[in-house]
Each structure stands twice: as C-alpha cells, then as structure tokens.
Image (tube, rainbow, N blue to C red; front, side, top):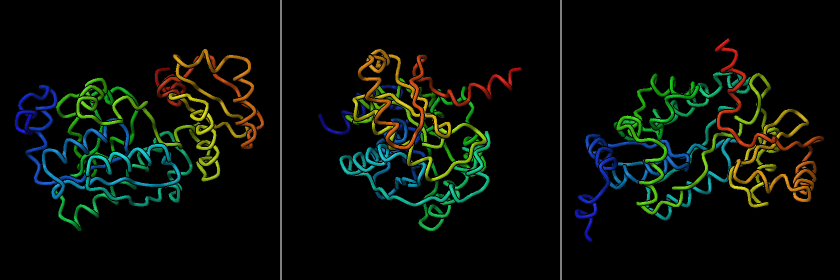
Length: 281
C-alpha cells in the first residue's frame, strides 16, 4: 500500500490531526520522548516533512534518563529532525524552591529557549504534546504555554491518551504502551527544595525498580525516607516478602535510611492530592 493509500485509510482521529498540522507553515515540537510528544513529533514530520519540523528535547537534571533514551531512539528509528538542548530551570530560585506552581517555571524556562530557537531559525509555531485528558489535572505549565503562544494540536483535535496510544501503536511507535511519566522533581513534596543530589537519588532508586522488572513505578523523596509507589497490577509481586526485602536493601544502599512500599500503589498526580484537598476545603 502506498503512502497516499495509507493516509486515506487512516483513522478519523488521525485525519483530523493531519488536517490541523497541514495548516501550519512549520513547527518546532517540544519532544520529551513520552507517548504524546513522540506521536506528535512523528505526525508533524509525516505531514510537514523534516525541513519544516524540528523536534527539540530539553535535557536537565530533572529529566529522566529513561525518557532521554526513548527520545533518542524514536528520533533515530523514525528519521526525525532532532536536537537536544540544555535547560537550566534548577538554577532558577523560583523553581528550586518547589512551589505548587513549580511546573510553570520549568515550562517558562523551556518555552523561553524554544521561542528563541524558533525565531532564529524561522519556525512558525511551537507545539507541545498536551492532550484532551490533561484538561482535568492541576497543570500550571499550561499557563506558560498560553503566555508563549504554544499550540497543543492533540488537545485541539480532542485526542485522549487512549486515542494517542492506539494511533501510536498503528504507526509502529515503540512508545505506544509506555507508562505515563513526569519529571523527577515531581517526586519531591511541594516546598521541599529541589536539588541535583535529590534528583540523582530518585533516578537511581527508580532504576533499581526497573531493574527488578517494574514498569510503573515512582520513588517519592521525603528527605531520608523513600516512599515507593508501584503500579497496582504489579503491586502484589512487589509485596512478596523476599522481593520486598531485596527492594528495600537496594534502595537503602543509595543513601535512604528508610524505605516503604505504599500499599495503595501508584496513583497519577498523588503529589497533588493534599493540594487538591486544601483547595476543596
């Protein structure tokens, strides 16, 4: 089947996205390597071509190496025009103090850099991978996106995470079933300072969990306490006594004095639970 036939046979949701992207002169994609941005980077390149699509990955101490490797692999395997830049949000006191709107300052740093690149290299529009499901969570980074005029094509055509996974699978993207993930700073409670040392400990601890074979996992950093969250489907295995003991020993060896496995399992946005309760009350 030739390319034109494949496009004609594509899902209606994908056609809506393709039609929207075709209306842009050129785009610069904020490309983290996660499910959403990987699909958007592929779709934009498919519609506009490499000359009119530039995918930028922002590297910093808060960016998980697991996502870095995903971004590099997708860019290589799907011939994306791809560059990595260094962002310095950790050097900003308004970010490192870890206020509840910390993500705003991270995205402000990112979009400042992307806006400069877009202007220097004549890319007409900056796009990100926000989708329709992102509307319901507390996401201060969206304010920064609005201030910089960043477009969210997946959200604009009402694609949900489930839609994006299905379309990514159809496109052959290896990220289609990749668990959702956020920056490493999201593992640190609000108002507890974000430091490079903490981020390195968190990343090493989560690498331990992946080495044990867990796909959905977080290590919440509470000073010398590590609170481990495991996906509910994988949690029974993590709570097997022998494996629990091995997990605890391996993470304690990184410098934590106490390690606990949360019996409630991983919950997306758990960092915001107390914040949401305070707002509601």
